[in-house]
Length: 83
Image 1: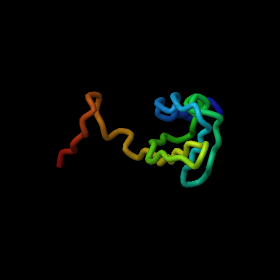
Image 2: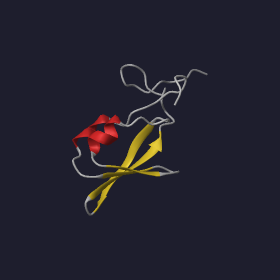
Image 3: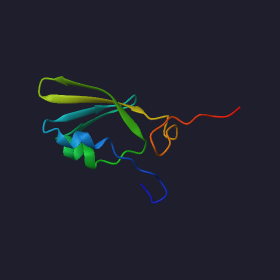
Image 4: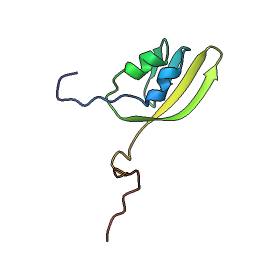
């Protein structure tokens, strides 16, 4: 990536996962040796975790693009529009 592109990190609670992690999005699947490796990974889109499950030894995390990046103000309240 060049310096003009934005990068994003996943929610940092994943750092606590010690098992192998598989991350699924609509377009791809990525494998990480643990949650710390995932927490340090830079994504080109802003994702939110929509599901967490297991398949034996692996933790499977499903991600979706966060379309509501600017829908919350600095106190965490939903912004209302005026007509």
